Image (cartoon, rainbow, N blue to C red; front, side, top):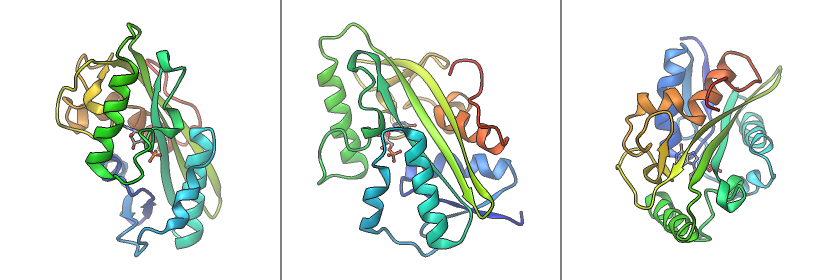
Length: 208
Ligand code: IMP
C-alpha cells in the first residue's frame, strides 16, 4: 500500500465499517487523530446543507484543505416514509440533545424515533449515504441506499446509531444483529463507498 487517504470522520462506527472496505481495495488510510487533527468547533458548520451529497463534499473538502492529504468523508442518515423523509440530513442531532454524544446520543435519537412512529403502521425507512472524495485533481461523490423497516423495539447490540431499530429488507434482521461484513454487503455506506472506489458517481443497482 503506497497511498494513504484521510478518513475524515469522528464517528467510530463509520471508521469501523470503512477501514476493512479500504483495506480490501488496497488503499491505506489515516484517521483524523492519526493525522494530528483534533476536533475543532469549525466542524459544526460543515453539515449545514440540505443534501447528503453537499454535506459529504463539504466535509471532505474542508479536511483536504486543512491537511493536504486526499480526503474521503460520508454524510448519511435515515429517511422514514411516515415522517416524510425525516430525520434525513439531521439524523445525528435529531433528538436536539446537544449535551449528548456517542451511545447516549444514539439512545436519545432512537427514543424519539419510536415515539414519533408509535401510532404509525407504515414503518418503511431507508438509510442513505453520500461518499465524497476530494484531492488535488478534483472531487467525486457517490450515493448508496438501503431499504428496511423500523421495529417497535430494538434488536441487537452491534453497529451504531439507528441500527438496532432498522430491520434490513435484504438481511431479514436488524443492522444491530448483523456483523460488520454482513451489514457492509447491503448497507448504504458499503454501496456508496464501493461505487466511489469504482470511480462511478452512480449508485449500485438492486435494492437501493
Ligand atoms: P453524519 O455524521 O451527519 O453523517 O450523521 C450520520 C447519522 O445518521 C449518525 O449519527 C446516525 O444517527 C445515522 N446513521 C448514519 N448511518 C448509519 C448507520 O449505518 N447505522 C445507524 N445509524 C446511521
